[in-house]
Length: 437
Image (cartoon, rainbow, N blue to C red; front, side, top):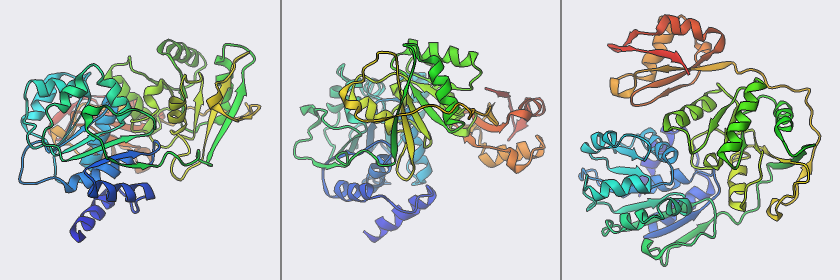
């Protein structure tokens, strides 16, 4: 037990986390002692770490096969968990597989069998059916955001996956909502349930209503964005059509933003989140896909451009701000004659101060066509920008390193100069393309 605690402390230090919260402490204990655990906790409270730490203790370093399976509802969540596992530095290989990318990439990665496999139901079912790895040694099963994962795999994929997991001895289900029914085929009877959703809505979250003088809320949204200033935030829409229409309007108003919704290509979705994380944009116009399970920083506010249909979506959207130790605001834009559903509850109606304005982003993002697979590190990239780019440390923003590429935030004012200097140079013996995205 002492070695286990010491190992967890070392991992936490690598993640720059120095204390677990109450939910995580209780989850670690419950998962360690129980064969079946259901963890219900709000978005942003650290559920991923709560199941990964005890999961690592179940692994046998002598077995070079898949030992833990993590089922997730979206490609973004798969990538996020894979990144967390890598950053934990445990020595165990983890791979994320998901729809929307070439299956040939999965096949290459699965030739070097990971110990921890993370994937979406459809893609996992495909690999199970083709027997691309043995499921004999899978002892730990996690279904993250199980209510949505079950819905995504409702076409039979989830049940099919479960039929291959005869040797599972530990099952963990997580969710940020309650009330979802659990199918019998998951075999969760008698599970230990930890429910942290019964606590009242965060006192740090302020809910405010802004009244639009017309049914079309576009101009009111622009006024609201100027009111909140340059803090990072998300504007939520219910449909792709509304989102795209709103994005075109914001372009006309010269408001820098990016979009995120299910119909986008995976590459564009990833780049949208990278721009938000590194400060190249401060406004994300999104569908409910962005309400949970994606890796973005604490938002200063969220805006319900359209009110969601169900309370679950409303709760998840609000969960993107006022998380853990921070304050935040949720704004509701009320159109002419619009009536809010009962679950909205009380909010403060405010008048906007449009004297504040959104500042143009200081940063922009450059793409580099080389990554970890080319033996390139963040230090190599920083050295390139310092030496050949001629910039100072305060002119180098966030670097995100991917397997086959990298993204670097640099001041917008010098981005064209840097592209001219660095495009087609050699980085670790590889000639790389560099351009703004």
